[in-house]
Structures are given as structure tokens and as C-alpha cells.
Length: 193
Image (cartoon, rainbow, N blue to C red; front, side, top):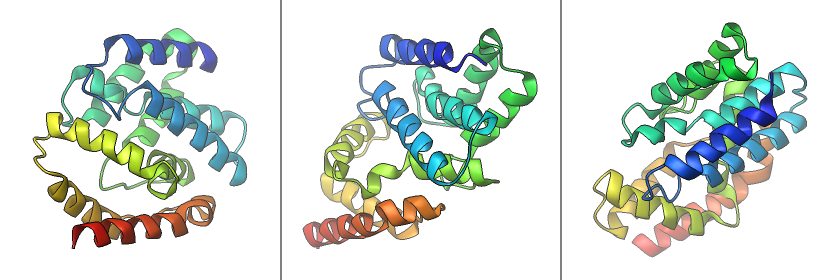
């Protein structure tokens, strides 16, 4: 598997072909999820081949947005993975496992295994990070265009509901992000009500 070449390929494709209004779901997000997945995998004792599959899934997990709309973008991401990963030495079995990992990120998240749990936590790592409000604003701006979101009040209400139903899966993410995530929720509630 030529992960470095696959990484360069998909990031270049996202940078050049993704519609401009994807302020959040873009190459920076792919790099962010890749970096966080690597950190969590290391902390959780995952290594070798499984880490390579996880990191590839992280890079490709939102590539389906290249097709535009938000509907079933995870399935579209798998189509892209199936189309291009053979060129980088990935076997059919590897690609199917990568697609299973990608599909774990579909909301509501439903990972089947530890690798799925890790990518889910990496994908929503920002909920408990210092840059949460900056990234949340980018996601809001994107959703105004892609989902017809109207007001910040509506967005805050959606975020509160999302936070209340979300939980991290891995011990690493719970320890790293759980406390700050709860603080962010309190701040949103305070601002909203």
C-alpha cells in the first residue's frame, strides 16, 4: 500500500475539485481526521497494517463531497476509494475494510470494531478541542448553503441536540476531549437560552 501517494492524490483532488462552499468538509478536515486518528490509534495500541487502513479511511472518509450534496456522502466516499485505491497497491480486501471504517462515520455513528470507533472519535474530535468555536462557525457557514440552515439560533439548537446524543467511543478520546466537550455544550446552552 502506497499510503503517502494515496494521501497526496486525494488531498490534491479535494483542494482542486471540491466546491468552494465546503468550508468545513475539505482537505484540512481530512488532514485533521488523519492526524487525530493516528494519535488515537497509537494511544490505543493499534499498529502496522490496521493503522494504514485506518489512516487511508481517514483521508478518504469525506471525499464523497466531491460529488456535491451531503446525501450519502459516505457511500460516495467508498466509491472513490474503490475507484482509486487499487492504483496505489490496495487489495480488494483492504479496500472493503477501509469502506467499513468510512461507513462507521455515517451519522448516527455506528462503528463495528475498534478501527471504526477510532475514526468516529477522530472525525468529531473538534467537539472537545480549543478550536471548537472556530470550526463550528465554518460548519455553520457550510450548512447554510448545503442544508438550508437559516439562523445561528437554529444551529445552536441543532448543536445542543447533537452534543446530548454524542459520546466518544475510545478511552483516549474520552480522556482527551470529554471535559472540554461538556464545557462547550454549557457555553452553547448559555448563549442560546
